[in-house]
Each structure stands twice: as structure tokens, then as C-alpha cells.
Length: 173
Ligand code: AMP
View 1 (cartoon, rainbow, N blue to C red):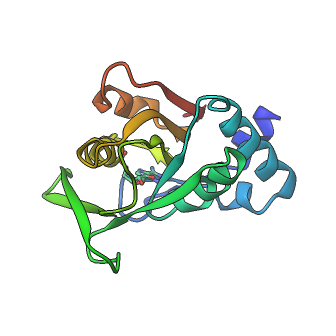
View 2 (cartoon, protein in one colour; view 1 turned 90 degrees about the vertical axis):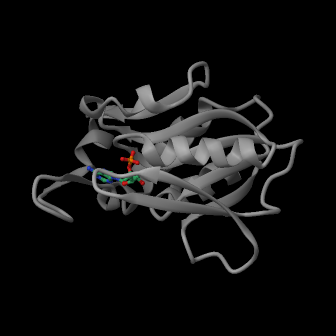
């Protein structure tokens, strides 16, 4: 099944810009059996750990993140690019190759009693996930771990995540 999962990830060269090998997860999402398998396998890693909220990173992190939240009986919180959330937010910036980007979370999205799982479809450089971790800690909640469908291991993104926080990626390319 793991081979079938990997085969359902389509690599699109030079998208959205030259030199990027984009990992397109839509063939996996469109296959009912593979989708079920992926969500079960992602959730299995975190069952019984008292996760209360799954934070999904915009925008592809919303899809499996919300399914993961359902599977873990947790709530779902969207982490969005600046300017998209309607209520009062807290923000965190992170460095890109050129310049900076900003992510936001609603100020009341998590509280001190929350045990949070951070999810995205792909970890590349790790900058977005690391910024989400900082934002969560600033809000006073505990980060139990990081969950990714795909790790791009050649970019060593996991090295940018805080030491001691468990990281699970279902596939590594
Ligand atoms: P990162 O560099 O880890 O902060 O990744 C930034 C965002 O872009 C994450 O939400 C990733 O899901 C997405 N991303 C980065 N590189 C790729 C790629 N090669 N294929 C698909 N998504 C990517």
C-alpha cells in the first residue's frame, strides 16, 4: 500500500516557478482507498496522546488536517496567510529565500489546556511549520508533535523544527 501511496504523488516540474519539483497530492486525494489509508496511517501515530486540536497550514494542510482532527476526535484550527482570517489574530513571520512571509491564527483558537498537533501536506524548508510552532507556544498551548504527509528530505526541513518535539512524515522523497 505504501508503494501505491507514493505512486499517487505526482511530481510536477517547474511549478509554481522554475526549479521547484512540486509534489501534487491531488491524485492521492481523489482515490477513496488511498485517502482512507493515508488518514488512518497519519492518525495512528498520534492516537492516545490526548491531542485536542489539529492545526492545519494553508492551504493543502487544511484537507488532511481536518480529516486527521476528525479521526483523533480533536478540533481543527486553520493557520492562514496574513489578511485571510476575519477575527482578531496573532501573527508570526518567517524567512523565505527572498524576503519574509507572515502566518496568522485567531487569538482564541487555542488555549493553555490544548495539546496541539501541527499538520501540513509537505515539509520543505520547515520555515512554515517552525513559525506555526512559535505561534502556538506564544498562544500558550503545548505542541505534541508535527505531522506531514511528505517530507522532502534533501531540504533538511526537520532540522529547523524544535529539538525534542516528535515529527512524523508518512512518505519521504
Ligand atoms: P516550507 O519550505 O517547509 O516552509 O514549505 C512552505 C509551504 O510550501 C508548505 O505549506 C509546503 O506544503 C509547500 N511546499 C513547499 N515546497 C513544496 C513542494 N516541492 N511541493 C509541494 N508543496 C510544497
